[in-house]
Amino acid sequence: MTTTAPTLGTLPTGLMSLPGVYPPQEDTRLLAEALTHERLGPGSDVLEIGTGTGALALLAAGRGARVTAVDVSWPAVLTARLNARRGRLPLRVLHGDFADRTEGRRFDLILSNPPYVPAPRVRLPSRGRERAWDAGPDGRAVIDRICASAPALLSPGGVLLIVHSGMCGAARTVDRLAGTGLTAGVTARASVPWGPVLRSRRAWLEERGLAAAAEEHEELVIVRAQHI
Image (cartoon, rainbow, N blue to C red; front, side, top):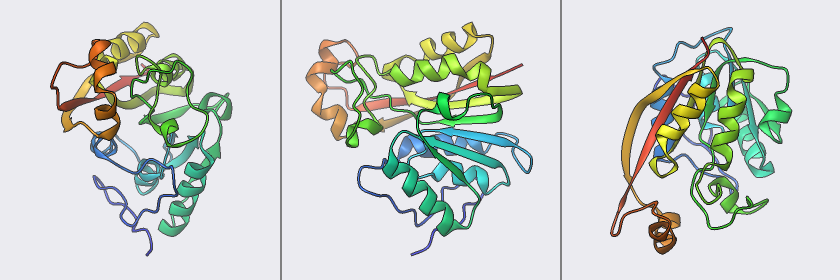
């Protein structure tokens, strides 16, 4: 089965996903919808942080943008490269830490669906499926790094779109981005049922005050920031 090139507002179909690679889910779809509202085309430089299958990067490439996708997971890098080849879309996929692999470059648009699930362990996992979602006790280990790096990565007028759980604190993300000199705000919200990872951590999340008793839905937020 080949990957079908995406059209505006849709994700690519026929994506493959190697074991341990985060497949597109509701957060990916919410970010894809946000992407449709951004001006993008030939000549635009786009960065995706934590590309996974490459779905969002391919969506941007399908609109003619020059896209660089970065992921710390080798299986994700290989998956994104394979999906780009199958979709016959140009995509530069790099392995490693996003800050190291993009040093000195600026982008018109940055997309990220980073790990954001609160986890009991302070240290981030270095391997395994959990690497795609575990993000420290408050779920902000990667989010805060992106917020701090965004001003140096964005071109004048450039936009950051980041999706994460409401458990991580949308206001904190907006405040951190605004504190770096960007204009920022929440532009979209969605409510989705808890998945198996959250359900397995219910007692711990309730103890930490991150979830209410018997809560069954998670709020997802899109934060948009712009370099003026």
